Length: 313
Ligand code: BDR
Ligand code: CA
Image (tube, rainbow, N blue to C red; front, side):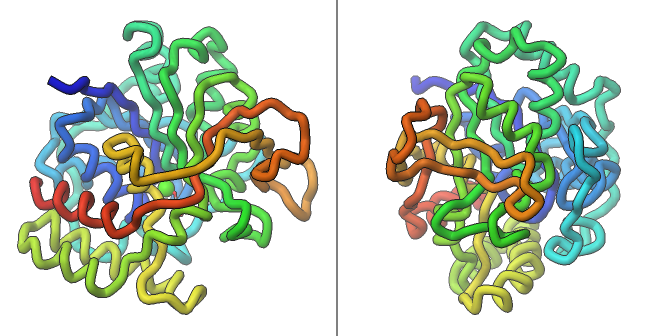
């Protein structure tokens, strides 16, 4: 019997966050201890509600959803309604959720869970700005060595940024939290734009989700059709990059990805390059490696995996 991996999903849904969450909920290899919402793509009141809508869409209203930080650790919140729509989850018409939001604060939940679970048992999947995790590490630094691994979507080197020429959205929104995470010594895997820009929601792939002919499958197709419009016109591609599901796919099938264990530092000062992931891919500094930086992915196999998993819901 293969090991079931315990995870916390930290997220700011977001259509691509939604596909990631649904894939995780459909995967028996993963046990979701909780979903922690953070402000990012849209404000927190919407991201926590969207997280609950997604759980209900996946037929899993038993999942625990917690609300965390309303704004980044230092900076003012920057949102991305231009990409994700007014609700953050534009595309399908989803009912208002009826499952409850947990009373406990997301940051307290992260700390308490890591203290309660066996050391090294819990993986954090970070799909949004790293504020909740940054706050947890600041409030209770003792949790750091208890985390098995952080797998995060964020940053970019060869592809540059997507919100400024230098910075990717999740890191840009809370660079101070990202800097804390990367300095924490926790084993970290970074899924940057260099990887996710290869994972395109082509018309054929969206049609395959729709062809599942289930409510979750059709909703995913509708989400992707809304979400890809912005990037299709920006990059001139067939489909847009599907970022966050790569994190879950990495947990399920790490062999689909390749990268290097390198030093990654976060720019927190410069106005021009704020939130840049300064990734030492070529080993030109003697800074110690602190993250596995993924650059390549078998995107065909990744989509097969996502479609197969969404088909289980
Ligand atoms: C990241 O930013 C958000 O818009 C997406 O959900 C993803 O997490 C990509 O830069
Ligand atoms: Ca996200």
